[in-house]
Structure formats: structure tokens, C-alpha cells
Figure 1: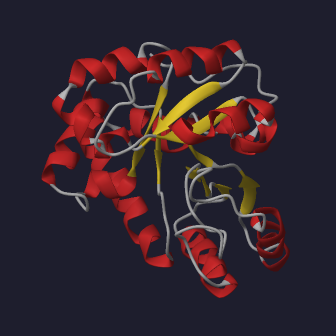
Figure 2: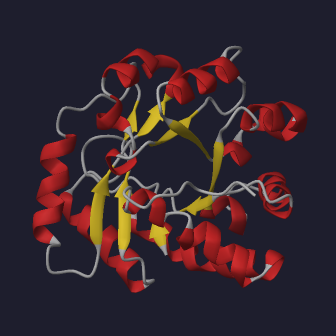
Length: 239
């Protein structure tokens, strides 16, 4: 599996507070067979803007250099407060300096201008990936609004915890609905602590039971390759 959303970097957001726990997270991921991880600390101009991200990222990479895991850098961008910063520093905030951007929205509302924002990102050559929309209760109650959003050109990433039911049955059912409708391009751990990786493989097995191995491999591994290797001359297929 290739993980494109997790909070492994210590002392920069609500992830681990020590480098020891960061390394433990990498070890737990490696046990599952995860060999490529894009670490995605929060970027929210009003809350998380740590200047220690790069320094701490390279400290972790130095310690795990002999592990069987490769780390890449990205961010989980809170789009509403950080759009101007993003457009001024596109390569800084995208996943592995690719054209793919992971962003999150508030969990209970849909910002009025979000569809226009997604179109603006496309005009700048950025392909947006919405993080864990299944946890947004506005989308759960307004499926058509969610469809309208992704039809503007927005890819979808679900959290493993949602699939196994950590966030409740309503969220799990919505996650399954999105997978059944073939609307999901990625599943990621969104891990904040070593224990979070315990459910990652379990979520793969659940999805495989729901829709089969081919689609499961696609959203846990195959689609992610385009981000890990941006030179691949293709885009993630939404079909």
C-alpha cells in the first residue's frame, strides 16, 4: 500500500509530539507492507503554519534511511484560509511536488465558493483531492452537493478509520456508498499516532469484500503511483 495522507512529522500539528513516536509510526506502517508514505502535516494559516516541518521531516528521514520505507512531503491544506498562500507557493504545498493537492474542508458545512475554488485550482494546473469527505455531515445529508463538487474536477480520498467504523455507522455507510458508486480514487491512513496504522490493512480487507480486489488495489495502491512518480505520463482515472 502507498499512504498519501498521514501526520507523521513530530511537533508540527496534532500528530506525534516526539521523534520517537514518528519513527514508531513508520515502523508500524512498514509492518503492513507500506513502502511509500507521503507525510501531510496540516497547513491552516489560522492554526498550523509551523516553520519546523522541513527540519523535522529530514530528521525522520535520516533516522529511517535504512528502513524499507520512503518518505515524501506534502500537506493537508485547509483551503478556505490558505488559498492565497497556496497559489503563491504551489510546489510547496502539493503532494510530493506533483500537481495533486490534498485539501480539507470544515466537517459541518460546505463553503459557498468551494466549487469556484476547485475550478480556480484547475486553472492553475492543480488537481485537488478532497480529504475524508465521508466525515463531513453536510455531504452526508446533501449527496447532490457532493456530486456537484467532485464533478468540477475534484478527486476523493477516504480515511481507513471511516471504513472500519471508527467514526460511527453513519460515516461508514456513506464511505461504502461512495465506494459502491465508484467515486473514490484513494484510501489513506490519516494516521496521527502509531496505533492508527493497525486498522489500515483491515480497511483494505473490508473494501475488498465490498467491491473486489481490482478496485481495492486501485484505491490503496495503483492510483497513488502517479503521485509518487509524477513523471508518469498519465492522470488518475476517475472512471
